[in-house]
Image 1 (tube, rainbow, N blue to C red):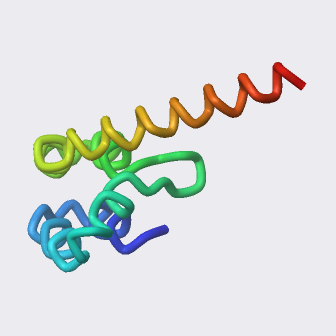
Image 2: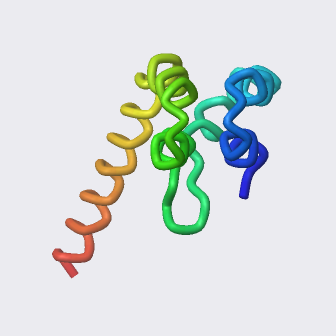
Length: 87
C-alpha cells in the first residue's frame, strides 16, 4: 500500500493533501493514478471507504491527469492487441 493510500485510510483530507503536495510536480500524476493490489486507485479507494471529501478533492484536482493517463493506457493496450492480432 502506498503512503497516499494509507493517508486515505485515515480519512484525513489534510494528510492526503500534505502527501500529494510533497510529490514533485512531474511525479504527481504517477502517484495520484497509482494502483494497489486489486487495481484500486486513490480516487476509487477514497470513494469505497466513504471519504467523499477526499474523493472529491482528488477528482477535482487531478481529473485531467487521470483521464489523460487512462486514455493513454487504453491506446497502448489497443495498439498491443492489434499487433498480436496481426501475428
